[in-house]
Amino acid sequence: MQFYNVMFTALPCIVFVIFDKDVDDSVSMEHPELYRLGVDNEIFTSRAMISWMVTAAFTIQPLYSFSDNIYSHTEVMRLIAALTAISINLAL
Image (cartoon, one colour):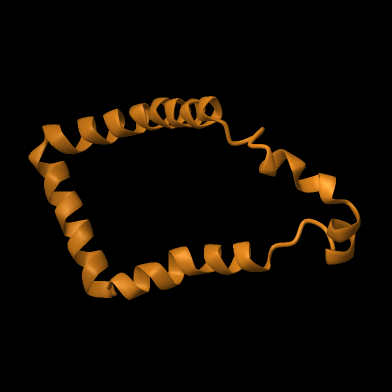
């Protein structure tokens, strides 16, 4: 089951990242200043990382609250969620 998850979710992303090219090799060799921002850590600062984490937390909060309210208050919804999980696992 875990191999299935890796194969169809993570592996395509890894393959894309490996073969992704923004510019040709000759252009990158002629213009090394293209990568200066990354070398100097001007893009991936602590402030940017914390900003992304806060944005992610505020983005997921409404989704979590919505799903928690739906599935935690009625027994019928819990049953539907359980049957959905079971049917998905049996189909795989």
